[in-house]
Length: 297
Image: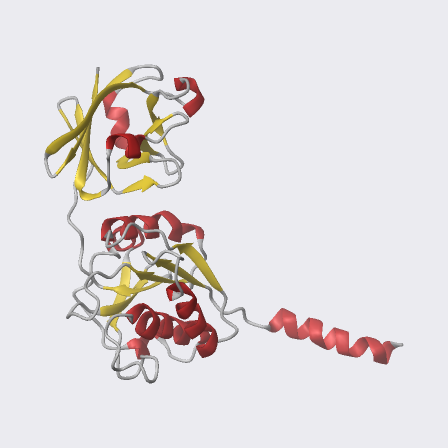
C-alpha cells in the first residue's frame, strides 16, 4: 500500500516546490467585438503556455491615454509584485513612440507604448527602471512587416517571454534613464474656497463622473453630508455642466433620477444620478481636457 502512495507523495512535493509564474494582466481600447484580444492571448499562450492571463479591461475609450493611465493605477496595487501589465492604448502605433517595459519600486512590470499611459503608476508606485524593447530580439517571429498591431507582435510577445523567464528584465532592451513620458493634467487644487480637479475616467456601466479629487483635498471645503455644492464641469475651458448638488453618502439618499456628489470606492469625489446616467444625459466625457470645480453653496 505504501508503494501505491509514493507517486502521490512525489506529486505533492513537486507542487509545493513549483514556482508559480507571474500573471499577465491585459488592458486595451480594442473592445471584444473582433479577434484582437484573442490574438494577443494566443501569442502569449504559444510563447509561454504556463503563463496565466487576466483581463483588466478592453473598454478604455478609444485613444484615451488618460483613462488608460488611471485604470492602471486604480488596479495595479491589488496585484502582487511580479505581475506584468500589458497596456495597449496606442494611437501612435507604427510611429517613433517607444515600446517600453517599466519596472516600479513595488516590483510590478508595465509593458506599453511610451505615450503617457504609465504616468500615474510611475508617480504612485515609483520607477525602478525603464527599458526600451529591442524589437530585433523581442518581436514575434514573422511579424516584421506588420506596423499596426504592436499589441500582439511586440507587447504581448515580450510580456510572455518575461513572465516565463525566457528573458530577464535586462534582456528586454537598453535602459532609458530619462524615465517615461508624463501626461499633463489638472491636479486637484484648493484655492479660496474652490477646488479644481480633473475627470480622468467615467464609470462606464452607470455613467458616473469620477474625479481625481481625493478626500484630503475635499475636506478643505469643510462640507458635511446633506450640504449643497456648486459644481461646474468644463471641456477645453468651455462650460458643459453646472448644478447645485447635495453631498450624500449613498445613491439612494438622493431619490430616483436625482443627482448627487459622493465619495467613490477609490476615496475620490464623484458625481452620479441615482438610477440614471449623468455622463450620457449631459454629454460629459473624460480626459486631460475635462475639468471640474467644486464650491460650497
